[in-house]
Amino acid sequence: MNLKNQMKWIEPLARFGYAARGLVYLVLGILIVAGAGVSRNGSAMREAVNTLREQPFGQTLLWLLVVGLIGYVAWRLVQAAFDTDKHGTGAKGIGIRAGLFISAATYATLALYTLTLLGIVGGGTGGGGQGGGDATTWLATIVGARWVAAILCAAFAVAAIAHFVKAFGRKYADHMVVDGDKMKIIDPVSIVGLCARGAVFVALAALTFYRFRTAGGATNTPGLAEALSFIRGLPMGSILLTAMGIGLIAFALYSFIEARWRRINWEDA
Image 1 (cartoon, rainbow, N blue to C red):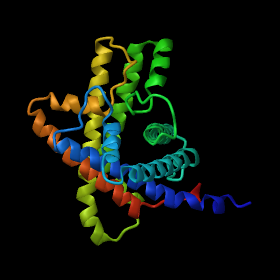
Image 2 (image 1 turned 60 degrees about the vertical axis):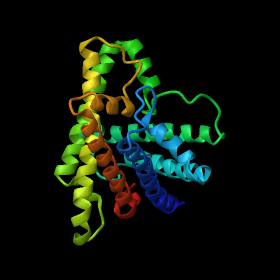
Image 3 (image 1 turned 90 degrees about the horizontal axis):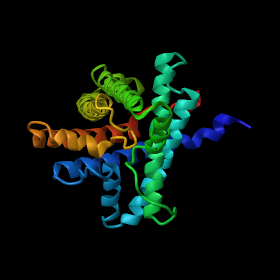
Image 4 (image 1 turned 45 degrees about the vertical axis):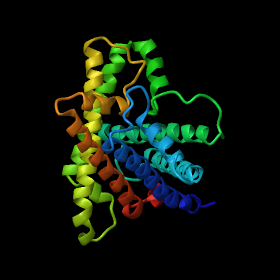
């Protein structure tokens, strides 16, 4: 039985998955620019999903979103487990692959939440949508909440740096199959989008660093909504938040670009 033939399904699902991620960020960015959807006590990602549900044909949109998120999760797991992008087994490679696995867990949580809205899965809808609150609570009971905050701070900082390096080093282009003329448009969109998402991770790193310095608990892991609220509280916060919303719309467009032109190299699995 040929494993590669069995895995042909991963490419269309992966592309659908990138598009689903783009749809969530597009709605989120529009909500931020419009001055809505930044609830400090909720999940920004879930608010975006709820907004989709309220649109015409909302149930259909949610079903499409679920399929896309499942595809994205499957692709992230393939990337992490089989190292399709050749990150290797060194410290840097393992870190990147661990990040891919965490990404899979995060979007699996969002897919599960979407299924609860469709009435397919029972249970509560609490949590921040970041895919890790229960894990950090469990870890805090072992090593202490302060050190969990330090670990999260370091992880968010590394994620932020990775996004900026990917943006300004044009590392995203390494995974694109597209001609040079289109890259003239793709480059600015990708750089702005990746920098905006990197800025979110900077805010998350700042929040968790504050918790570490004040010995705050790590049981409530800060999520995207809290990061956006943090940005809004800065000097000229409204302007910064609007800029962030525009940046996240650019990240949504970057996700759509990946859906169309990213190299889905499942053959290397």
